[in-house]
Image (cartoon, rainbow, N blue to C red; front, side, top):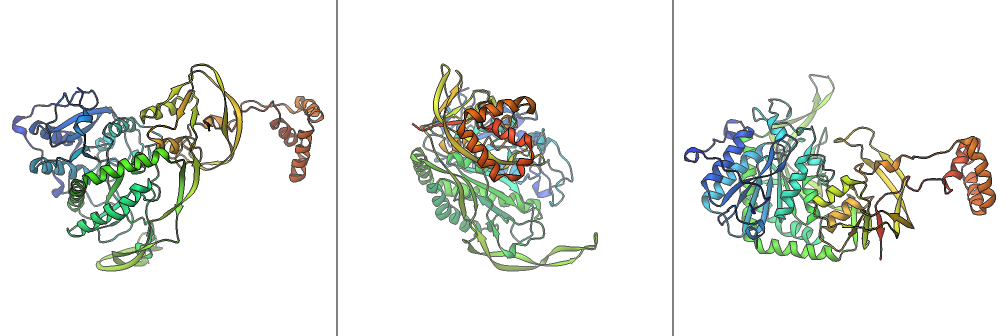
Amino acid sequence: MRFLFSLMALHISLLAFSQIDLKYRENKTLSYSEIIEAYTNLDEKYENAELVDVGPTDSGHQLKLFIISKEKVSDSQDIEDLKKDKTVILINNGIHAGESCGIDASIQYAREILKRGVPKDLLIAIIPAYNIGGVLNRNCCTRANQDGPEEHGFRGNARNLDLNRDFIKADALNTFSFYKVFHKLKPHLFIDTHTSNGADYQYTLTLISTQKDKMNPILGEFLSQDMEPSLYEKMAKTKWEMIPYVNVYGNNTPDKGYSAFLETPRYASGYTSLFNCIGFITETHMLKPYRDRVESTLEFLSQLENYAQNNSKKIQLMKKKADDYDRTLMEWDLDWKLDSEKSRKLSFKGYEYKTVPSEVSGLDRLKYYRDKPKTYTINYYDSFLSTQKAKMPKYYVVPAAWKEVIERLKANEVVLKKIKVDSSFLVESSYIQEYDFSKSPYEGHFPLRSLSTFKKEESRGFLAGDYLVSTEQKNRRFLVSVLEAEAVDSYLRWNFYDEIFQQKEGFSSYVFEDTAIELLKKNPELKAKFEKWKNENVDEEKSAWSQLRFIYMNSDAYEKEHLRYPVAKIWK
């Protein structure tokens, strides 16, 4: 089948196109088999809808995708023809399976749009349930702060991974299957549906938009000046008025003001923005009735569809301009921090609250009073400043030995050219100067919390089979974000190159003592450097080993691979 992934579409015959009853009005969410049956019913009923297998997940089940188009969808179609001249919307559900409101809302949305007619300018793609392992792990109680549904899925996937932290490191099979979906569709708009955890307030639906200051500036301006204001205005005219995601936890309260959420590339919308796709995360409030959470998500999907239909050509033009901009951009932002000097006023509908004695601990606890709604004027901080930049070289040189990196680059459509024979190049290398690993595991890794490097121009040898990666290609924003050592979610930070932090060779003091004497005699520069180091590190004069180590590390005996980032840059 040419349609999408050269995999067979799902065709399961059902009597009279029977329709699964949605149960969200009864505080219930569908099981995984019911979810798939609901979409299969629609596949069978409508010629312009198709449910397809995409690829494996850690659960052993295939990830599925539901395609909705104005035109008939057939097995012989190519996705490029189907999405031609259309604005593509990708909706992802159940990445945290206990946050199921988007799963139910998307089924209802698919039913409604197919019944009323699909806009000709749009192609809608829905991942029914991304974290299949989590959906299958149903229970009553792990969403301890959440009001329903009666049973729900679990946050971790079949490997107990939080899939919304996996979009760069790609430990899960789910993530590689998402890559396949994403790069085939190349969506203009992405929505990831969630339920929030944190402060209490009147709103049922809050929204995270791709952070404007870290995305392509053309899209950032379009999003913040055009698209977002329109969506907030339209939602305010419904019963589901929105507010930006309430990024407040613990005993902090939103009336004091709060900042936007910075979704770096490890997160779904942070990843999709690397490819100039505008991303949204809907966050329904955990303590609102489940029916309301589903229906507010459904309303947002409908409003986004309306905006996309009315502005389809503009959205496509903005993405094209952003892609063109990125092709010539030579300096890139790698990390950001909150700009505490910039804020805007929000009218925030919250509740009165007090600190009262806890009946459990006897200590102070925070208590909101829902019978006392109150509107506050607050500061909302949604501007971020770049803290790290890098200029883009002509080529990156990526050794093939780190096959996990190569696999992920290829999965993200990065073009790699193999070096045919062993070669030497004049390159810029990065050497790790200071670093600090996380002291406890985070999503299966001990990522680098801090990192600094120094640069050195040198001739380095590379092997046949290593890769030259030209920066004259698409997906440059992704390329910089994973290959630049200091980038906030680089492959280096995510432990793909941890081997370089361990020194492999060494010396025995009693043997190297004589070698050190000869080195200092024959190399006046080394001797002067050694004397300078001793003057600056007087405490080290008490350690013979430390002094020998300094001489060793500044000699040809010291291995070049230690603390040298394997990825190199060629500037011309």
